[in-house]
Image (cartoon, rainbow, N blue to C red; front, side, top):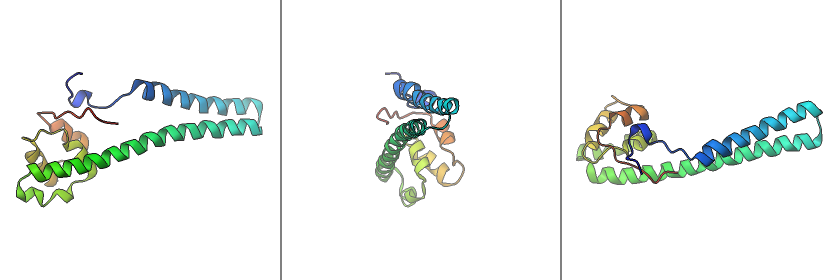
Length: 144
């Protein structure tokens, strides 16, 4: 497995992102086109509903998995911060947003206190900016 860094850390599942979603979108578009060609029929309407339902099912399955993953990351990082951060920052752990915690998870233990201080002082808010500041990347290979 390649060493993880900012440039390659996003999770791309070829079968899911490159096949399932495009096929479901194509199926929905095709159903709409066919309804336009044949005119409104109950069968055509059911095909559109089914195509829309399949697309929403795949979208929500992904969304639910990511939401659970983010909650777990939030918990893991709060426990990690209790162990690593100096006392003045420990008292401010609750001030981090979930997106900030998710971005900071890639920071090594050594650089976490400095980055955490910058984030809490309001100098950095955006997750992408936080990740770009990380010098010693702590990989996360167990993502949904």
